[in-house]
Length: 251
Image (cartoon, rainbow, N blue to C red; front, side, top):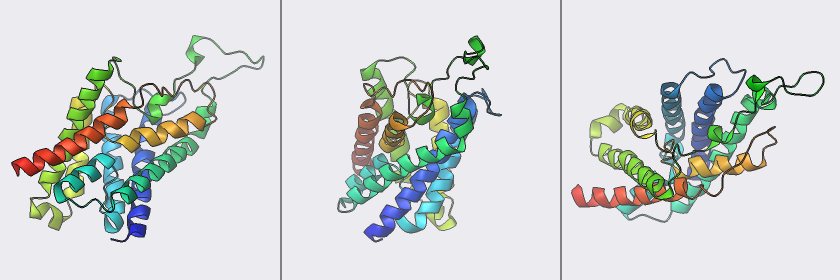
């Protein structure tokens, strides 16, 4: 795979991932969305389908990593580091692009974050601003940086180690079902391990949209919470490398 193919593939695939993932969060969160308050199970499956669509789309060009933790885990396993920077750059650009596309898709709902009457005043408690950061990036349910970091490390090992092990099953690759199994794995992680932190398990999935959230002109959008931003970056990076080492030792 050429550097150009990898870069373009990761941009496209990661943009689709974030469009679906941030999109389902917007659908569940924003006022005047038909899917509002439909719940965590919907969010988990929305992210899983984002992985499915993004990885299948990117696979012919780049292999469909879409996640620096996956890229690092593979590099630790294979010892091939020369193209890692191309993957990571494409993933960051794609994540930012996907966040912008989500914003454009839900533009009217974002603009209606606080509805006003003709006098320019809000219409009561039902029209309080909806915090928007959780649409784009993760927010811990209990803010404890050490515990949150450990959660992200464990959840990312739970993603990357199985992905590496799936490669040992030739039938998955030959049948074209490997990406489907990975997508279901992401759904499972969301349902089982997503409660404490919102399961970033992907540094650029959190960082790229957080950057975009900082600059988007969303009314009453609230903070972008940069004080916490290092956790969903560092945790998955550590988890990806750790999964690569475990794979090398065990398999």
